[in-house]
Length: 329
Image (cartoon, rainbow, N blue to C red; front, top):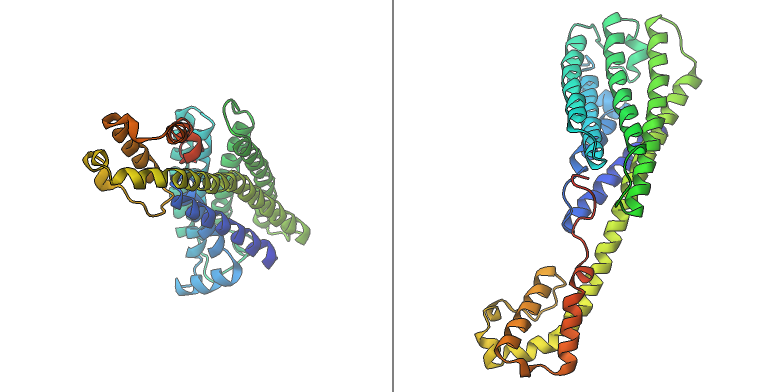
């Protein structure tokens, strides 16, 4: 069971790490904060971690509420971003967010009025017979199930026009993860009902719940990593193309910098002949060469002109896309 807890956590942090790497390539934060919240919540819910930290909080299972709030906030934000990426009506997204805030208040109230002394890693089995705790658990998992179901269905119904292959496949995998999560939630709701009736649940049911949750996390991770990997691969490929273009232009720029026209060029002071495979440097070199050609078109040979013009026409392909994912993702 420990493996079913720790493996999804490690996978979630791997997604966070990949997104952090992506920031170096100019990606927007996108799903990074939401993934970090979910990963943090899952980390706090590992049995040994939970018992230690909840002990510091007085052994009243306050950490359970913290986990619920972090997980709920993270999944809701992920849902918002995914729905935004699939062009869902803003009203639907706002309704989900509003309902999430209301349920967060309800969650807090229900736990505060419940007697939950003594840290319990299996909160449902230990305190599920208490009506307020049953309502507390049911409201949280019901909310998560609703978010996952709506998000998964809307992803499957999305308009796929214009999306890249890797992004489309990633979204489809995420949708499968959502539906697996919904199945896991259904198992959990059954466990909550059994605990509320003060009965003992079969271990197989609890194991099934954990397995579906693990599958959901694996699908989320794979769905987010697939397009992220493709974007990182494309970024490295673009860097290689920029280095090749800069190597082609370097001898031309080095020669022109020493000419009278080069000295009088507006961009002469910004020219750096050191190797920097950056978009800014490539643009500056092209602008510098263009300025010099305006001042004296005869300074470049026909081969140099052809090479410069070829790079200029292919500049978008050479540089690659800074952030090819839909807004926010």
